[in-house]
Length: 383
Image (cartoon, rainbow, N blue to C red; front, side, top):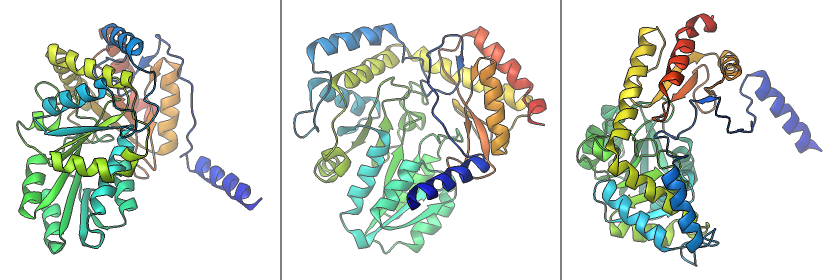
């Protein structure tokens, strides 16, 4: 069949260019040092959270079994939504999605429905794929602004000021570069042109700010119109959340198709995330440990001549450049008991392959020393 021939050729082409991806079973091996998980606070194995999960399972169904509007909306969901509203800076309402990808797709496409021909979207050029896909699915006029550049955003919004609805989207912490968005200036520019601001706080929640509150906490009061975040990273669960005012959330409940037509996250997933938030609030030293450890590792890597781009968070990219070389280094590291995944096109631009070091507050000193010793030799390995 023609389709199979085309698929075979496409896979061959992907392999030739060094972009091929494959699934590898995670054997949950304690001897492997994990630097690739987004379990930034080390809560995914937390015994207290596991006990909470057992209690919730004994009381509620294992699955929500339907959308939130049908049957899949229980007290753990409500409690989590209320907690997130407070934790993220005092938002009026919150809704939960099955994933961050669906959340971004859902809110962007829903907002574009209000006035399709009169909606314009500007988003950071390094935005996550879920933001890009949400914009493309909306079929509205859009433009990318230069990474973290409020002046370029201003020029774009000025050029498109005649649009009735203007939406500006960026990440709080960029997932592949590890830098923090210049939210104060981006939000100020957006307000000047009456644009709605959406911040993807997936990698900022639980990790930046004085208590891990994310972007609003980091900038001490900066408040975008809409915040999206995930439960499956620092909060050790699964799913995502969207925060805004009551009117906006009411609109999403009625118009966001991924919300309306998806099975809700399970009650136990909601309860796990809630317990993780409680731990973060009661143990602020956990967030401080992550931030201090990340800073020390960044300094070490820079001092050893490694290019970590503009990272100033727990996500530390180590630029390699060549895709095949990055994959070879990843393989060498795993053979030495270190899981440090390479990231290549199309996740990042061609020729910008990198190792993505995800710092974890649960890393032990002996593990950190081993990792830094191996990384100090990386320039020799790259040659």
